[in-house]
Image (cartoon, rainbow, N blue to C red; front, top):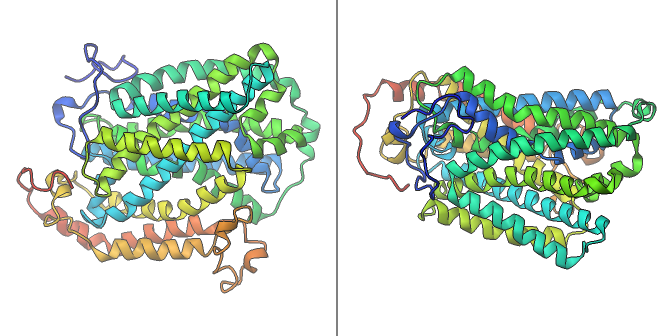
Amino acid sequence: MITPPDRPDGRAPDRKLRVETHGLDVIADTERKGTPRTLFWPWFGANVSILGLGYGAFALGFGISFWQALAAGAVGIVFSFLLCGFVAVAGKRGSAPTMVLGRAAYGVRGNRLPSVISWVLTVGWETVLCALATMATATVFGRLGWGGGTETKVVALVLVAALTVVVGVMGFDLIMRLQTLITVVTGVLTVIYIALVADHIHWSAVSAVPAGSVQEFIGALVFMMTGFGLGWVNAAADYSRYLPRTASSRGVIGWTTFGASLAPLLLLVFGLLLAGSSADLDEAVAADPIGALTTILPTWFLVPFALVAVLGLVGGAVLDIYSSGLALLSAGLRVPRHVAALFDGVLMIVGSIYIVFVADDFLGPFMGFLTTLGVPIAAWCGIMLADLALRRRDYDEPDLYRPTGRYGDVPLTPVLLTLTATALGWGLVTNSTATWLDWQGYLLHPFGLGGRSGPWAYANLGVLAALALTFLGTLTLHRDRVHEQETLAPSPVTDEGASL
């Protein structure tokens, strides 16, 4: 039964909550439901986090002006989420998880390479979000005089992690319901927050921030891309796969992009105004992006602020833990989906403990993490988008699970393209605040870009280079292979390879 379009979460009225049993399998026609506009709710709920305000300080940290940062943020956010919208179309056309659909380009077993990369990225993101929610809670409690020390952090971490893991393990239906709730609650409370701290904006200080170079602008643009859409593109089809095949592709692209971009754009503008008005706030955000924002709030709103901060971060972490479980299965682990999600939840808790109780700095490792994994994900995205653009027919679903099928086992071209683009990309990015990444940037000097201390050192051109190289390379080298695949008759439906 197809859900009536007026249900915002896209579920059937009499559908009872239960642990989702679907893993890497194709969603049957009888279970596909909703309309493209139901995609607004999970994507908005996952990106309405107060962390979006912190990106204002992150952008100005590249040494650019308010207007430059606004342009870099707007283009980076919308363009990167537009990539998510295009990938989401694959979900409707194939009704399988993103990392399974990637097998059409990479082959059934060759796709394990990007699946591992996707898994690391999503586990990393869910860890960062869980840690931020914990630190924000402790900061609020500290300001209220209710603690804020180690004990508070432990309790906050347990509660945040429990909510994230439970929802991620339960799966799609509960996620859609939670994201709808998060969208409404955080949307309203965020507007109240903005109204309460608006008097801390001083346009004279904001407008006095000097402009930066073209290289610094590009660096901020790429950081916005990796911090937003490129952090989600590898999971973009995980939610659209439940839509009917007849759903509008333009609608899928539009609602995904609109839902994901709306909150970050509004939060970025206000974050830029706040960070540009106060050098102290700008610096504090680097250590505790969300907790720093409580310092300008009246005491009576601290509890509602904690609620909006935690819910917004949990909204993103839930989508990440769901998709990380699917990526882990696609990488070759043969367990039920909910077991994979639970395993990732344990890793999330361990990583959060390190960030909250051990690490001294947040921004440095965070930027290094985004830039480093942003390169191979951009390479994967280029191949996925080009492969999707070349196809005129829906995926042959049985062959997505058969190494002997039309998509092959380990085709060399996409694997070599990914490795080449990643090597090129890492050679064109740097991060001075993360010492474990000192080896990057090895191509900046040979390419005449001034080396690791030159003007192009922090432009992070490697992300854009990886995306462009794989996209153009796949369009050029993959066209005949796709045409040959689509001339074959539909394959018979069997259980062969269903667990791959």
